[in-house]
Amino acid sequence: MSVFLRPVTPEQGWEGYNLVYDRAQLNRLEPGLLTKPLQVALPGSKRSITATDLTAAEVKRIDKLTRPYLYLYRYQLLGGRDALMQLQPAKS
Image (spheres, rainbow, N blue to C red):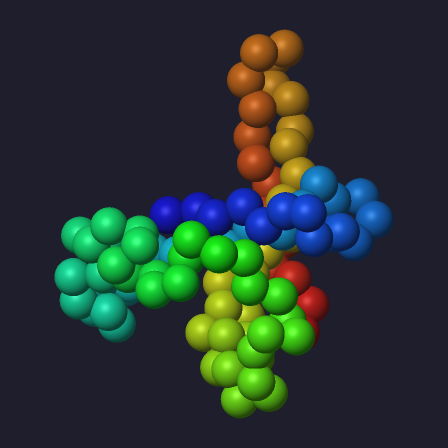
């Protein structure tokens, strides 16, 4: 499963940031999470949340849960019509 993070400005030479999760691992960590509608799985998802809305503890928890899955990405064209998404782990 892949989640594109926009409009976060990436490092030079990259198009953006992407979170890449293994569905099986995510299901082991949070059983049933992928079977719920988004508004149930992520309460409050109907409103925008900014960093100023979060406590320091929440920011730390989000970073701990997402950092291992955070990658920079860019596309490489193959043969004119196809593209390959190249990933590189984001720096800590």
